[in-house]
Image (cartoon, rainbow, N blue to C red):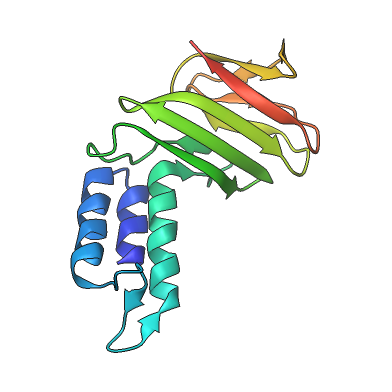
Length: 155
């Protein structure tokens, strides 16, 4: 189920990934959410489903962080914090009515960050705007410092 969820999330079909998740909850997990495999629990299935949920909320392949790429219709509001993505970044994301409302990025490696914020925004650090390059595809790119915390001020 975890593989299927992740694959449909990569295809940007959050509703289909969510139907698979619901099937997992209904048929293939114990009350503690561990995956069933006959009688013993199966930790790799449990972790796979968690990875599938993560793929629905954030993806970081192809050199760009993509926020809410496969958000199901049934998840209009939410928060996802502490998720680590490629490039050495840790994210705290919040959304309301299927729209990103808050993004905080901790740079663990001091690399360049390229992100699809989903709408126009300003990149802030310590309350000050920092330079960011906007691309035609809607992504933003900015330099980071190791240990720096950046906030996207969405407009």
